[in-house]
Image (cartoon, rainbow, N blue to C red; front, side):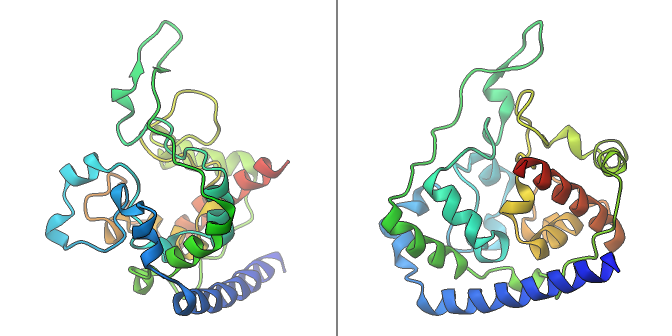
Length: 236
């Protein structure tokens, strides 16, 4: 049965990911992130809850990385560090970088691009990021079962029923929105992280602007399936 195949594949992936994480945590040199200056734009050490404020969120120059090991797929990190395309093309506050026009909003400026990492440094940095383990206790033992859904119904659920399209782009068409682009999210984010963050975003960041809709596991699975379907389109 297709559903059982998906569950089995996810379970195997989780085992491999966990084993890979254990190796990375043992082998990583966490000091490489400081030596490369990553902590000038990213938090690599978890702050106290009192420091996690709306003001700090708005002032971020880059995403928090202290839970990068729980969040990102290692293969995506390696590819992105070699060719860092923006995930939030207009930054945290797109309204500061856009203007109105008769044809709609136009992006006037982009944040400073992330530097490309030298190829000989990439594996070292990926290991260091994988070893940042805050939040691993928030991850489910296995990601939700992904239902088999028609593409149009999955998109309707995402855009109209859940309203996710008001903050996230699912293609590079149109002006950037306030949330990160999601057309590459399935390849970027670990399935367990997606499941946990979609269900309870404030567990990861108390001031995250993404709302907690109290979604059931089944509803989370539907949104994840849409992101998976988008990734198939990206590969074509």
